[in-house]
Every structure is written in structure tokens, then in C-alpha cells.
Length: 183
Image 1 (tube, rainbow, N blue to C red):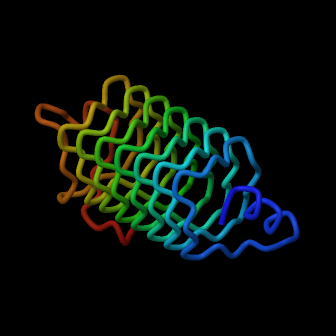
Image 2 (image 1 turned 90 degrees about the vertical axis):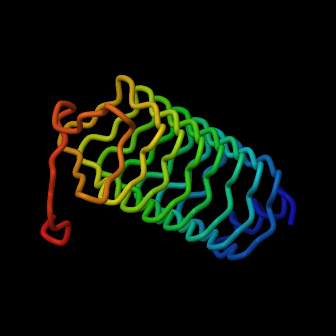
């Protein structure tokens, strides 16, 4: 499927693109709100400045994708592969990224406020000036991540959360919660 076919199908009301092979497509700037891209392959795709608000991206592959300034508010993105993706200034407000893989992703200036980030792999991510206020980081792996100037006030973590060496979560205004089921 090419970009034109997907856009025509979407504009006629189709939202189901499960397991679609869309690697390398340029869908930048398009409104694709509420689209279902479960297990779709979008490796290397360009979705910069696209609107995917409320979309369903369970286990989708967006490895090496350009997602700069893309809107993912309230999207369901569990176990998504965003390794080495460019998410600079992306909006992931209240998105569910449980178990996502973001190894070496660029999340500088991204909005991850109130996002569900349980068990997310943020190893070696750039989170410079990212907004993680009130996010749930229980079990997240932030080893080697850059948290310089990141906003982490009221973000939740537990005993399984792994931080970069020398990082002090309490000094950043984070909240320790021993039983995440109570949150």
C-alpha cells in the first residue's frame, strides 16, 4: 500500500490498517486521528507533524521513523518499537506506551505528561527538556538516558524503575509509589 492509497481509504472512513506494510512512506502533516495501525510496519516512515491522536499502534514498528512534532495524545501504543525514532517535540500526552521500546530515541522537548510508561525501555534516550510531569514510570529503564532539564514533577516510579547513574528521583520532584495498583 502506498501513501495515496492509505489516505484515500482513510478519507472514505476506513480506520483499520492492521499489519499494513507502510515502511518508508511519507505521511507527514496528515490527520490520521483514531487510525488502527496494530502491528503495522512503518519502519523509517515520515509522519512528522501528523495527527495520530487516539490512534491504536499496538506492537507497530516505527523504528527509525521521523515523528517530529507528531501528535499521539491518548494513543494506545503498547509494546511499540520506536527504537532510534525522532520524536522531538512530539505530543504523547496521556498516551499508553506500556512495554514500548525506545532505545536511542530522540524525545527532546517531547510532551509525555500523564503518559503511562510502565516497563518502557528508554535506554540511551534523549529526554532533554521533555515533559514527564505526572507520568507513570513504574518499571521503566532509563539507564543511560539524558534527563537534563526534563520536567519530572509528580512523575511516579517504583522499586523496579532504573535510572541513569547518579540521578536522584526525589530531587527531581518524583513520587515513589510502592504499589502501582493504588495509583
